[in-house]
Length: 334
Image (cartoon, helix red, strand yellow):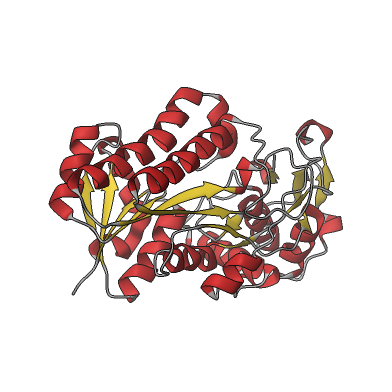
C-alpha cells in the first residue's frame, strides 16, 4: 500500500531533502503550503513535478482538519518554521503561531479525525540555549534564549502532551546545525562557501568575519532528514538528539572551505569587530548515542565533505550565472 506523507515547510532545505528521501522510499508526498508561500515552490526545482502541493492556510484549524481528513496520511512531518533564527526577534508572536500553532492544529486534527498517523515534530538544539553542560542529550535541561527557541520548546511539549494524554504516535528530533548548498546566504556556512567560490573566480577579494573562535556542531541536512524518517519507523515514539557530536570552530569552517579551492584563508579574511555577536559563549554539541543505538543512525557526510560540496556548488552557480556576482568585490558575513 502506498504511504502518504504530509510535509509542512516542504520548500525549505529540510523539506527538499526529506521529500527526496520519501519519494525514493515509494511514498506519496504532499506538501502543505500556505497561499503566501506559493512563490517559494520554485525552490523545489524538478522536485515540484514529483510531489503534490496542497494549498492551505496553516493558521486555519478548520482548513488543516479538512486537509488531514481528506488526505488521511500515514505520516506527518511538521517542519514549518522561520528559516533564520535571528528574524524571530522581529515577530515573536508570528513565530510562535507558525511553530507552536501549526504543531497544535495538526496534532488536534489527527486526534479529531481518529487516525493512527505518525507525527514528527522538528525540534531544535536552540531549545537548550544557555547550556550548563556539554554535550547535550535527551535529558539535558532546556534554557531557550530567543523567541524561535521558545516557540520550538512550546511545540515540543505540546507534542509530548498529545502523546501522553491521547496516545498519539508523536515524536521529535532535536536537531543541531545542519547545512547544505540549499542554505540561504545569511547562514554563515553558505556565506563562507559563496565567498570562497567568489574569491576563487576573481569576483571578490575579501571576506569580513566576526568571531572565528565560535563553535558549532555542524552536519549535512541530507543525513539529518534520514533520522526524521527513522524515528517514525520504530515501535515507540521518543525524542532524539541528532548531531555529529563534534564541535568545529568558524576558523575551521573558513579554512576548510578556502582550502577546498586551493586558497589560503588568511590572505582573504578580515576581522570586523562590528560583526562580533554577544551570544557566542555557549557551546551546543550533541550526544547522539540514543539515535545511534535505537535507530542505527550515523551521519555519513563529513564536515570536510559538506563544505567541499557547498563551495563547488557555488563555483558552478557563479560560473553559470545562477547567482549574482559579489557586490563591490567584497562579501560581508555576520
